[in-house]
Length: 194
Image (cartoon, rainbow, N blue to C red; front, side):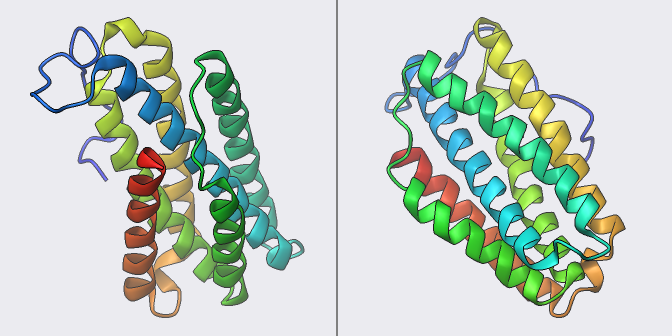
């Protein structure tokens, strides 16, 4: 998490400005962002689907449904951006379909607190990820910057909601959280490239 999460990192005046030799050009950078964000929102929707498959009647279900609805809206936005901007989606979508649902269901099997711990871990990585993207997008990508900033605020809300619902009281919170964070970072890296 960033120290002042309400601040949107200021990007350069133009996307890709200040890049070094070997860095992606502006168009490739934006395509990579859209590809990975589309994959991430798809994975998040699948995580919540897995959690709801197990906890659909639990006390925490309405909270999970609210977060799932926001993720679905994010996914629909990136579905549109993939088409409008002619971005190749990740080839790993079938993997994220299964892995996301499995992660959600596995965390939910351990109980509501574990499901919330999974959410807190994923969303802390996504907050950092979106903040990095915002720092690279310039004024020439105002609409994409605004979309990512809005979605980042939702992800921060999900993280904080998970903590408010006893995520840190889940069994083996620290090791589970670190494992989920590592897996999320790996999924980001792979989805940017494949």
